[in-house]
Image (cartoon, rainbow, N blue to C red):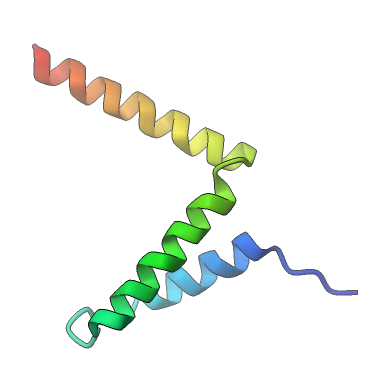
Length: 70
């Protein structure tokens, strides 16, 4: 039996959609892309990979904040 991880499938779809030219996109196309990216974020957030990404982004934001205070 073949199983497909929904997060991986969404990541592939988002990757393919973002590779297209930007001038050819309609508002509906942009909205669909945003919904897909948000759905992918919701699926990745509770996973170890999602927690790792959140940690890295948190550290990066902390470093940027520290640099702006100096």
